[in-house]
Image (cartoon, rainbow, N blue to C red; front, side):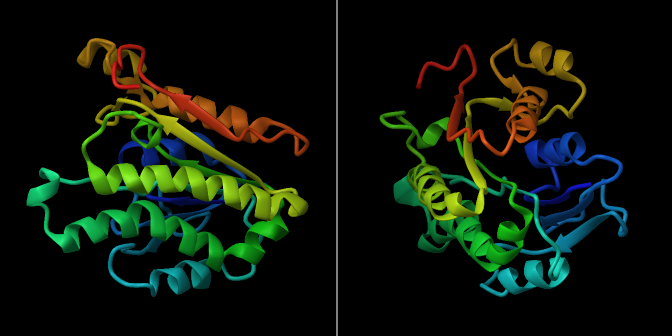
Length: 229
């Protein structure tokens, strides 16, 4: 049995990760502003949190989990700009950073002792937008994903003595509009230009299946036809 925390689990890749990682004997806390379809209030608990609201989200997550050890923490929450950089409101730019980067650092900080007790894995879902010289023009989102990679490296060093492994997974273009288990539809719908969420879930499951002696630092997974990486 594992205790699993997934932040950003209500839809898209996060919902797919919840569906693919949570086993019948596991306990899970799904952190999101909207209730995920998988939440049952017993073994899979919804933790209603708005990461952009204020810093009280840290305490809300901690209160829900209590003193339980956390064996797997997946941070998938992110938003991006909805307009050109020079047209964006400063508050919206701050919101991108709060959800896509600061929230990860703050929640991991608040659950520090739970994670150490679990001696398991932290998986941060980054993006190829955060890779060097990628060419994206979403300034706040790119900065957040670049920063998430830096956080992963520092967290890995911090948690190493506790045998906690930290991995940053950087997917490229994804078919987040197609649910887990329907990869063929995703390929057909997007002409094989977007990665089915099944592929990212399989990759994360592989990382989590490794022995405590192995640490996968970072994986970049662009779509085959992505040309900006």
